[in-house]
Length: 320
Ligand code: GDP
Image (cartoon, rainbow, N blue to C red; front, side):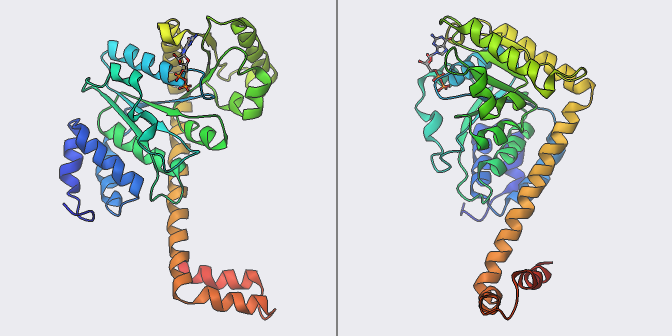
């Protein structure tokens, strides 16, 4: 089948039946910002809203992959269908490399109820922050109960990506992620659950205290708000994973009861709409630039015959 021709109904049906190849193909369409996406999203929409999206972030080396693996094992024990979506906002063109050769995920490589994928954003103007929600939609409609979104690093774009989750886990390790560092990276605000991994190492209790202290100083200490638990794990030995699962369940219950889950999902949808509108506008402006007007207007502005506001008004009038 050529790149342009996609049998959307068949693909969506196969993905909904859980066929990994169909899911993979749909996510590739997302990465490419393929024209068929419009039809894909229309077909998927009625089947979304079931999956619980769990974001996982933390500095390289804290144990995110090990934790992801441990959580997949734990969710599988509960009979849940799980997807792992690995995103690396700092290198948008490295799709595939992130997870492909990682031995640890081979624990689940043969399990048809576990879908593992890394995400690139080859054609997306908005990058991974706009491709991620669409990929999540695909996994959700494909019948996953849980989607773990793992990001590399703790920069602004990571915060944006995991900020889309229903529940966000922030991983730290003793000595690496003290409270001050966490505050600087902006992760104190986004973490719903903090996990101090590598608890077998010295300083784990001090890091736990540090994070608890920082949380107690912030806005989140107000009554009525979710008070993020700070847990300790040894992910490589599967220790403390039950407590993490319990924390996730409590957070799901809390956000479902008080409307926070709905609010988050609405905010995520708003971001998604905005990203599509912006990329549509950008591409239309690109078309305009190709055709005529910007050059002419720019010349007038440069010569003082017009001003930039008046010039942009005439472009905007052309866009709508
Ligand atoms: P990531 O870069 O955040 O994904 O970290 P990884 O999951 O790749 O883990 C980095 C290293 O830490 C690996 O060698 C893991 O085996 C190790 N590791 C993971 N969890 C623990 C733990 O609880 N204790 C110790 N000592 N090492 C761990």
